[in-house]
Image (cartoon, rainbow, N blue to C red; front, side, top):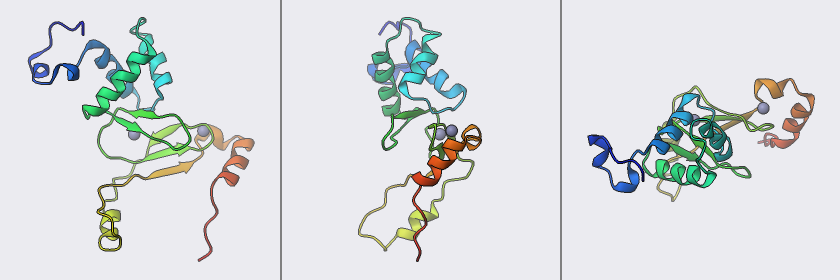
Length: 158
Ligand SMILES: [Zn+2]
Ligand SMILES: [Zn+2]
């Protein structure tokens, strides 16, 4: 785009994968605090630094950054996609009431995949794991607590 002097390391990548200023600002905002924002949230953050950027441009750059392996796009059932500045595998904790999402402070459980070996007809390529709960604020909210009790399935009696 308008980036006329890419640095040497950037020239090796195909033109559309170049780290433009817009792309760099989006990445910086995404990595500043890892709040796993939606595209709308990120757009508001980026707009403070790039007032003329459009939501469409933010979307396009998020797709490209995902393709470049710089970020992760998190697909959450029944809710808007969220974006993660950390490209390495890690787990999340999500508030089922307000949608806040944080990184879960545990290492990936690769043995989970080993346990499935031979027990399924699938070739296991990876897994996702999400912990559900109430964030500190929602924990204090009576409506949120009642919602959570009804939203989560009960343990099956084995
Ligand atoms: Zn919450
Ligand atoms: Zn994350």
